[in-house]
Image (cartoon, rainbow, N blue to C red; front, side):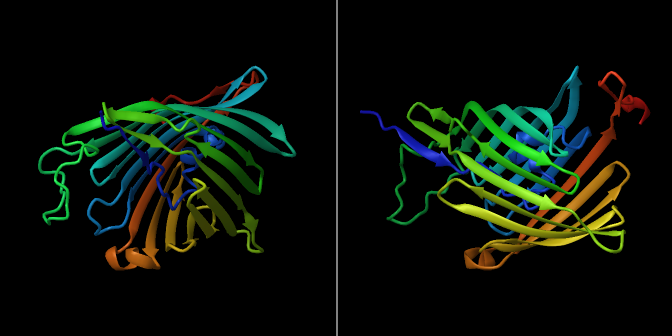
Amino acid sequence: MALYSTARAQYDAQLSQYFMAMGYYNPGYAGTSGNLNTFAMYRMQWMGWKGAPQSLFATADMPLAAKKINLGIGAMLFSESIGLFRNSHFAAQLAYKQKLFGGTLSIGVQPGIANISFDGSEGKLDLGESEYHQKEDEAIPRVKTSGMGFDLNAGIYYTHKNFYAGMGTMHIMEPELEMEENISTFIGRSYNLTGGYNIQLTDPLYELQPSVFLKTDLISFQADITARMVYNKMFNGGLSWRVNESVVIMLGATFGNIQAGYAYDFPTRGVLLRATSGSHEVMVRYQVKLNKTKSGQYRHKSVRIL
C-alpha cells in the first residue's frame, strides 16, 4: 500500500505596502493608473530568523481601448523562498472597465501557473539528532522536487477621484500540485478586501491617505490599518498597524515618472518580538504616460526616446 501525503501550502505573501501592490492581490487593478505601469517589490521578512520568507513581486500593466470597450491588461511574476520551499507564480491579467457613479468599476481575472519546489537534498534537510526525531519519513522528499498547476484569481476594483475599494479572491480552484508520486500539496483559497480615501487638508500641499486591508483564508486573518501623509505630491510617510502582530513605518518619494518606497515592520508581540529584528520591504514603480488618440486607442512614445 502506497503512502499518499497531501499538505496545505502557505502561499500568499504578506506585503506592508499593499496599497502600492494591489496587482498582486486583485487583477481588477490592471490598467487603473491609465499609464504603462511597471512595478517591483522585494521583501525580507523576519530578519535574523533562519529560513525566513524573502519575496519578489513584479508586474506590468496598462489600459487598452478597443472600439468602445475599455480594458486593462497586465502580467505578473511572484517568487518567494521560505526555508527549503520556493513558491513561484506567473500570470496574465485582464480587466473589463465600466464607468459607474463618476468612477470606474473594473472586473478582472488572472489565469496563471503556480509552482512549489522543495529542496530536501543531502546537506539541506535537518531532521534533528535526538532519539525522538524520525530519520526517515516518506512524506518528506530527500531530493529536490517540485509541482506545478493551473491557478486562477479574480477581483473587483472601484476607483473614484477621492477613494478606491476592492475585493479579490485568490486560488479559486485551490490547485493541487503533485511533487512526487506519493507527495502533493495544494494551495488554499483566500479572500481580501481593501479600501482607501484621499483627504485634501486645508493646506493644499498636504494630503492624508488612510486605508485598510483585510486578508483571510477563513481560518486565520491579517488586518492592516494605515495612515499616510503626502506632501506636495512628492514625499510621503506614514504608519500602519498590523493587528496583533506589528507596527509598520513607511517612507516614499516620487520624482517624475519614478516612485520609490520603503517599509520597516517592527513586531509587537509573541515569539516574533524575541526572535527577529523586524522586516524590510522596498518597492519602485516606473510609469510611461499614454496619449489617447481621438479614435480611443492608446499610443505612447518609443522607449528608445524616453
